[in-house]
Image 1 (spheres, rainbow, N blue to C red):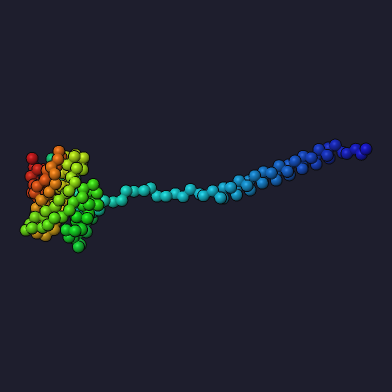
Image 2 (cartoon, rainbow, N blue to C red):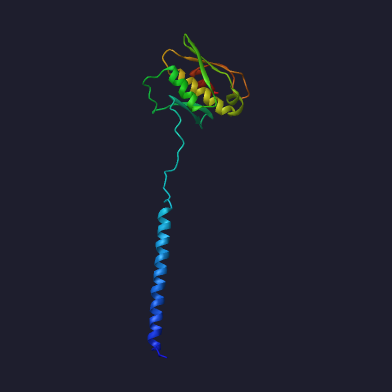
Length: 175
């Protein structure tokens, strides 16, 4: 029987173990890298912002001094091509729950109808209803020749139908 040099044999076994361990670790690392490369990288998306409301010529703002809503001119509003149909569409987009229909224009009055006014009269609250009526009134009276907007809808707790003017809102702010 041949005798082997024990220290040499131990060194050889250690070397083989070390090489084998490195190869296994390299295999795992390669497999891990392959697995990682097949996984889709998370893509950073910019935070979503709500779509801007369609621009109206005036917006309702709360006046702390008078505790009333006031109309504030919208400096970003483009008055180019301003007409009754554009304003009706913009109001419908700004307030999708309120479907306003233009009936007719006679003399200085725009006659509008809201077939289902439940949201306006019962769900928006008094301030919300006033805000809508103010913005719609100021939008239509921005058109040449229109000074009055007559709203036709079923009366509710927070809004009443009738003729609205810019003067009416100004007088309410003074009370």
